Amino acid sequence: MMFQSSRRKALALGSALALAGGAVVLFAGQARAAPAIGQPAPAFAAADADGKVRTLDEFKGRTVVLEWTNQGCPYVKKHYNSGNMQALQKSATDDGVVWLTLISSAPGEQGHLDAAGARAWKARASAGSSAVLLDPQGRVGRAYDARTTPHMYVIDKVGTLVYMGGIDDKPTSDLADIKAARNYVVAALGDVKAGRPVAEAVTRPYGCNVKYAG
Image (cartoon, rainbow, N blue to C red; front, side):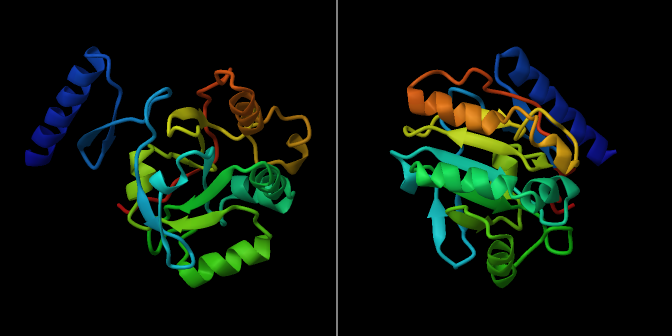
């Protein structure tokens, strides 16, 4: 009964905020503001696979891509086994973009890696991301309402969230679909570089559910 009462209160709070024009997400019965396009991207601090604490603030003045991953997910495998994700990472970082790959799988869940495991995975996959961030407690993932692997976000040079959603418009695990796909991240980065508003700023993410604790 106490749980039901708490849940009702959280839902009521969410409804009130929604009526006030603010989006919310619920995590463990707690209402939180959802990330919003055109608003400052949620701040974070997380250790990378080399043990260095990285923050969003340190990358002010540079475009940032956030990529949620789970090396056991077939949708992630689609983009890594084909080399598609690595090519996107290399193209973006060669253009000065910071690409951060995040692992929010909890210990004991599919895709969880410790620092050594993350370093080994990155080397094995020939990933071209700027850093792999470890988020085993899901704090960064929940702040961004990251739901799937992959789930992609683009943040502009002043720290504004300008894109969130799927990597492309082919929500399958079939490698053959990549060639004909419209890549939303490439399009968003092109708009940002050209100084234009991102044409498709929100799309539906697809993939495996992020394996949060609980």
